[in-house]
Length: 149
Image 1 (spheres, rainbow, N blue to C red):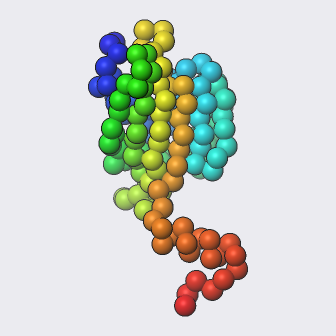
Image 2 (image 1 turned 180 degrees about the horizontal axis):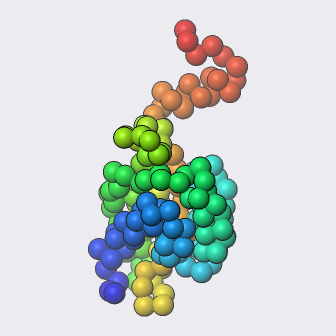
């Protein structure tokens, strides 16, 4: 493998394949041993083994049969020799659904480093994509305000 932008941009597709197969080890294979993954709720999982231990029970139960769809890499770039960033958009489809709900789409930021002869994810940050209107509705609900008027 080479230190190219294309090689970095291919990482999310392999992670999505692991997810879609319900295989936490395959999903986490792109992570460095000491990587951090920040899920969309803000929980930090430290280390590839912790990511596997967190995800596999969910793949076996509540996320069984879920799929990552509409994956795209809007951009990836090498920021310094041996270091790069990848921005990835993806949506989650739950079992029995044909389409992803709009509130199940995410933007991921992957910080990657060249080590062990390949690009490895050092940190992956998940952020749920929500519209300003949705965020304001949630804010109003949290504050106990009527959102129907």
